[in-house]
Image 1 (cartoon, one colour):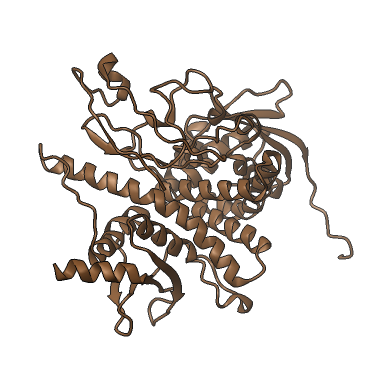
Image 2 (cartoon, each protein chain N blue to C red; image 1 turned 30 degrees about the vertical axis):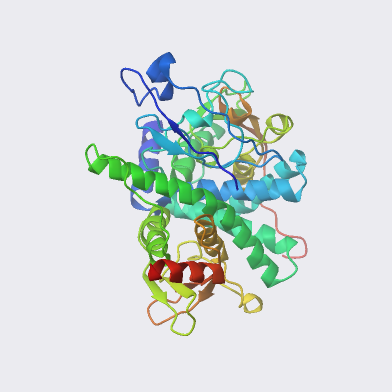
Length: 272
Length: 190
């Protein structure tokens, strides 16, 4: 996926967060045009410009409209909204209901369990791509808040263990409110890692009938992890497996198989 | 009376509901709608009806949870139904409280006006000209309402009339009471 990077420098007297980017007046640097992605792709969260600090941003899809105006007519576009909003919460049951409907729709259109898991994986994948950017942005924001005056110091993770730690702690916490329970490396295969969640949230209220024993609905989250890792240039395949133990009947293991190219790069980096 | 309802809605939200970050919800819904659009070849009226069906299936199950959490008895009037739906129902499940407005002359139709819609956070409709005229992005909500109300013997017509994603001023759902259903014994049983 292509993305354009640019620094947006905002000059002006005072930034008023309640007003947003337009508060810094006509001296605001014009927004650069970015490649548009047609084909009717719906957009979910993509990073807008946060004009409080010069920010490096990249947009993933859809055309960036000039500040404020909109093809529909004069209304503000979603890019003016602040990403760092107060946390909005929703009931777990709404999420479970929605997830249930999603599975049932895909069940009707799939001919096999494998196909169903693939579809769930794809749905999670698109979310993972966007979620990586959102989570990284927010981590930078928190760093900026706590470290007074220091510029944004978060770096891209290029080592396997680092990116996996990022997934286990930051991404899991922002999605589910707590970090994942365990991160393990497989002893048999060098390129396999496992993220373990003792009580995955989405499938808490799902019970599997006999015919669908092989299906693990957490394939959705597996897809999300795959999306996150793929867009950080760690080519991999992620699958979800149920491994119940005594206290945790729904314990799920996300098996991450990294590609050869990733292992080679890792070896090269370690050798340096 | 309505303050009491609002209070109970808030209480249930605070105490009995397990909460989750709404972003996962928003993102999941977004990917569902995009998958539907792709599968139906951007035939938005088909997508709308699919979303409605999905919502209907959710609604017929959601009503059980709603009744269990709120422990409310039968509403005495349609007005009361409207208040309960907006202040308790939506509060418990979506943590938003739409305002009830635009009552029709015969008190059989009301509108629910949303100031914020967690399903459509940071969403922009595709720019292909058709979407902003044909797609009701949050149509699943109308389905949920119809399903839930039907399970309490209120046959209603629920539909969107405006949506900020389409460029309108507000997001509004109209609920029109068609009839009050009678419980019937299924054919063949005594």
